[in-house]
Image (cartoon, rainbow, N blue to C red; front, side, top):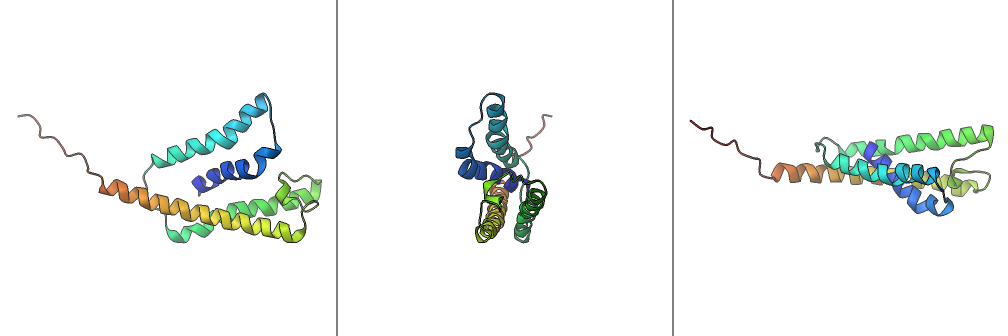
Length: 140
C-alpha cells in the first residue's frame, strides 16, 4: 500500500498540481524532495525488498486511505474554508464533479494497487527463477 500511495503522490502532483505551483528557493527544494525524489527513491527501495506476499484481494485496501483523506479534507475545509487541492474544493467544483473526482481517485488508487500487486508477483517470480549461487566446495 505504501508504494502505491507514494507513487501516486508523484503522479498526481506532476499530472494535476505542478503546473499550478511554482515554488522558489527552499520551497522548490522541499517540493522536489517530497514530490519527485521521495517517490522515485521509494520505488527503488521497494524493488530491492523481498516480494511475493501481496494478494490480489488487497487491491481494494489501497483506496481506503486516500478516500479517508478525501472525507477528512472535505470536513476540515467545511470548518475553516481551506482546501488543499482544487479538485477537492466544493466551493469551486460542482458537486457532481467533486463526487467524480473522489471516485476517480478511489479507482486510480485501486488500479495502482493492482499494478503494485502485479509487479510484486512478477518480481517474485523472476527472483525465484534466477539461479541461486551454489555453495563452493570447501578446501580440504
